Amino acid sequence: MADAYSILVVDDNLLNLKLIEKVLTKEGYIALLADNGPDARHIAAQEHPDLILLDIEMPDEDGFEVIKKLKNNAATVTIPVIFLTGVSEVDVKLKGFELGAVDYIVKPFHPQEVLARVRIHLKLSIGINSLVQNQARKLRQVTQAQHAMLPRPEDFPNAGFSVFYLPLEEAGGDFYDILNISNQITGYFLADSSGHDIGTSYITASVKALLAQNCNLVYSPIESMRMINDVLVEILPREKYLTACYMHLNRDTRLMTLVNAGHPPVVYMPRGKPPFFIKTQGDILGMFADATFGIKKIAVNKGDRFFIYSDGLVESSEKKISWVAGMKRFLTIFEGLGKSDLPDVPNILMSRLFNGDPMPEDDIVLLCIEV
Amino acid sequence: MDFHNIKSSLGVDTNEAKELARLLADTLASDIEKIRRGIRDNDVASIRFVAHSMKGSSGNLGFEKFSQLAAIVETRSRAGRLDGLGDLLLDMQGLLEKLEDSLSGR
Image (tube, rainbow over all chains, first blue to last red; front, side, top):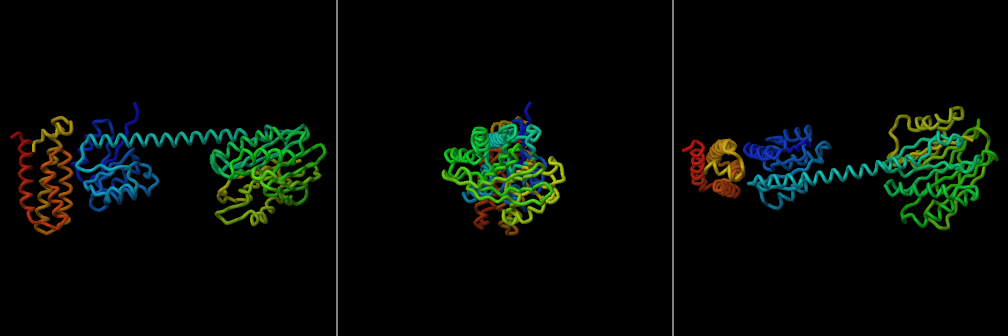
């Protein structure tokens, strides 16, 4: 048997309460009764009824006052309220609607009208709840799909990387990928897509497919990025773009090639030496057909470490920290990290950076790579 | 006013109709007394409030004649007019007595 719906009836007139109670209980509803505003609000917050029938004209706290308080309380804001009013003036009805009522019933009312309006608003409420749950379910699926697309270090034992990934919303705008180009060559890609909606997660999937197609032994790293850019310019909506960083590491020749597309600078920490930024200029991905990207080639040694990250790690609009201002402090958190085990490094960096403070209001990806 | 009207009007059984009618009769008797006091004290606001309540509760149980009388009292008090309310109260009292009669099987 399905759970019975509960209706809170609020009226200072005992007879009206009794009458509506009888009508509702006969139809299988649970009737909760209150003959004044404060009691009604208390019951609404405690019992969370499916609907409220609220009289306007009550002594002390009237129905307008009650609905204002109900709509200001997170525990009761979503409960639909139908006004019971003996006043048929338009202004009164409009005021009720403005304060958040879904409907009104003019007194004297016929019990069948009360039942009909209760039924229709319960149906609407059920429909809205179902829509919300459906959307939440779809977003959860997107999140799961997005997480499934993100490579884990244990799946790429030869890639020598560790990662911290925290999407702001269900469908994060930041993502990364690891590409096994050959036994000796690994590609590391990190991008920050504009927006955090479901569309963004489709971009993630598209870019992942483009990386698989274009990051190979045939194309140089800069050629791979140009190919991907050309396709993205064609397929992305006008307002969408990505900042990205692609690191191409040949562990045999010990040559690292870095391609930057409008992304924050990579931190390079040669083994036993202090960290520094690899600064390269470049256009963003997916916006310009004739984009030029920054490129840097560095001869590296075993044990050197690279850190690629999204701007959410440094910026904070709440604290008014911009990317440029945040970077000055940022480099100091890498000091002494050369001795820590690679899998531990992301969490050490995060705790040093935020030191118990709340996380920033953006996606965060931090990719730590060891040669 | 006959409490049996409630049965047909609301689709309830005799006992329920009687229970509601009893409650209505007691409420209206108390409300009529409050209006009398309001007239005596020249308290227009409380007359209006009580008449409004009477209008709704009697109308909800299908006693339209009583509800109409209460509506007149409400309208007049809203306009600040207390003249003639005494006669209206007598009419109300008469209807209420008929309800009491039906409840006691007379």
